[in-house]
Image 1 (cartoon, rainbow, N blue to C red):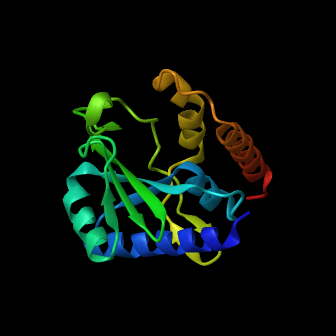
Image 2: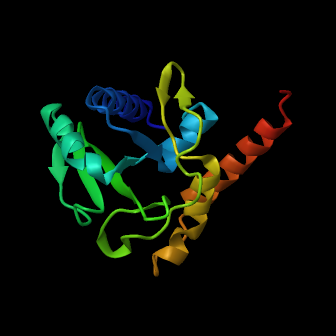
Length: 180
């Protein structure tokens, strides 16, 4: 494992949380870092940092990140996802909205209005050491990793996703067997 890269990514996660809190903006880790913050330790190398944020906060979040030295990257439609880079680490913010029934949905792009897993944003705060961060629920994380090859035709299931699902399921079983 590249410990220096992981340490740099953890610093950027901390910085992003501080920026969001100062702006009054909610962000949630998703992807591999959400898994690690649920488990409580770094389990593998991570290529990037994946987040969720509300579409209505995109402008404020963009401004805060730019003022802190993040550089914008081109990527999916801006109403679907915002991509940035700092210190050779990419951070992607998938944007969320709510539909008329109050369900969390994809905010824009080709999947606008598609519903995310129920309860996705209801997880307890995750932690690695003293660093705390909102994360998506482990059940939603598993569902997203299982369904991504179905939702995005032609995208194969990645080995790291299969391994992450195994880790998350084991952590959930362990959590269920702990005394209250």
